Length: 286
Length: 273
Ligand SMILES: Nc1ncnc2c1ncn2[C@@H]1O[C@H](COP(=O)(O)OP(=O)(O)O)[C@@H](O)[C@H]1O
Ligand SMILES: [Mg+2]
Image (cartoon, rainbow over all chains, first blue to last red; front, side, top):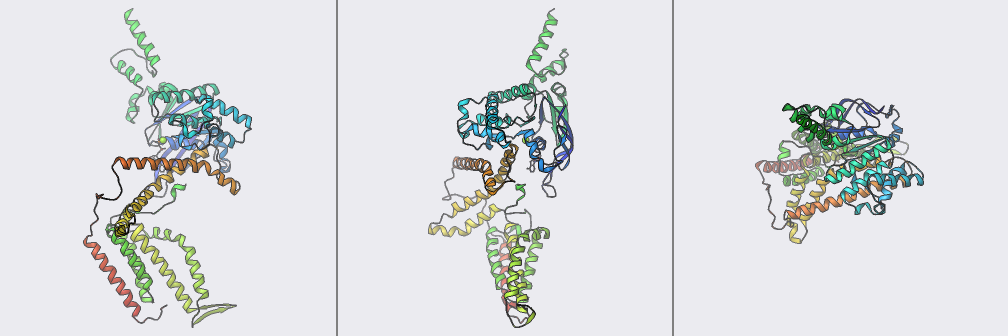
């Protein structure tokens, strides 16, 4: 099933001025439902622009955006409906917090949806749990938290809207390894439990190798590659052509294969690599 | 988008007008404003309009840009014309119906007023805002006002504040845009509802915006202190403004222009105010 579909979409910033900039150039894309899709690409390749199309914050200059098979711009007056269907967490979302307590900030989105108090409460608690926010933290002011904690509150604020598609723009940018792990791990747990669609923008190969099922690679306003994580990382040379690398462990496997060892393609986790190498060693010792 | 608002527009370029010393430009602008108000008859008005056109041509600013910048002026022009046309009395009655009398003097006066206001706007924007970067402007202002330090006015501090404010306007506009998008993604609605509701809807934008502005101010202050900024006393400059030959040329031209206006005012002319 297709969660979000983009049909021949182009987007131009500041058209008719000297600062004209084509951010998306006639792209088409289908995001599969119930999966975690990683959206990767160099800075300036158009990732952030693309994700703002998904919930109708940005209207494509040309082309169509379909969510659940519906053209979201068919009736522009009803566009806000799709803001709830597709939840978008912006880059550095910690700067959007404004309420007196963490609890009220997380409840802002659900309250805008017009849900009952009971339902809001349930959603706040649930999304706080996925994001590793303790009960005690819920009563604090968001401005007394650390950067990583604020980020988690902001993500919980979108999760609590329980969107069919959750889109996160560089959710782990600028965090230490443990912070990245907590946030991305929480997002994965949430996806596995709810079975909804998640799109994560990132340029960390290691993170995407660990957390995504499918990967879309963008380059210069175009879709460069789209496939399962194994398929994408198997094309290491093409990736390096557009300034991206493959995960270190994949790199290692490729090097071993170059030296004539029989390492299978499509390895991108340490566990798989270990199994493959053990098998090789075991074969030799026999 | 809110980002499309242009503030203190500056069009970089390489013309004589761009290259003039910004201090000289401020002085020239003041002189030009004075000359516009000196003009009294048709000949001098022709000179004023011609000079404004000449400025636009020399600075290579497109007429389209100039016309666009005049749009907000239409209301002011219509307003003054309305009053000048219907409330000026004189000797030559042109039209008279019901209780309204339009005199020739009123027509002349309105036309001259329109010319005066448009030349004023065109001259000052071309000489100052369109061809001088805001940073250069504040810098020049600081130097022109520096004698006021003698009476203990904090001239340097004011100009530094102005420079910083100008520098951060685009940043804050961009930030407002981002925060608005982020809150819209959370279902915030800024466009519908009563006035009270809309005012309340601004809270999720204003609070993050203020917090980030204070954070930026704090960071900037720290960064400036780390680079040993201690105010204007004893501070030397990287770029020293120096008057070139063209600056003297410009001032002579302006003096000639003002003399010309005065002279034209004195020549007999069929139409004057
Ligand atoms: N608000 C904007 N105004 C003008 N140009 C923009 C704006 N936002 C992004 N761009 C340009 O569009 C291109 C794509 O940007 P973006 O979608 O932010 O890329 P990414 O998220 O992959 O780094 C970049 O070249 C960027 O400079
Ligand atoms: Mg981005």
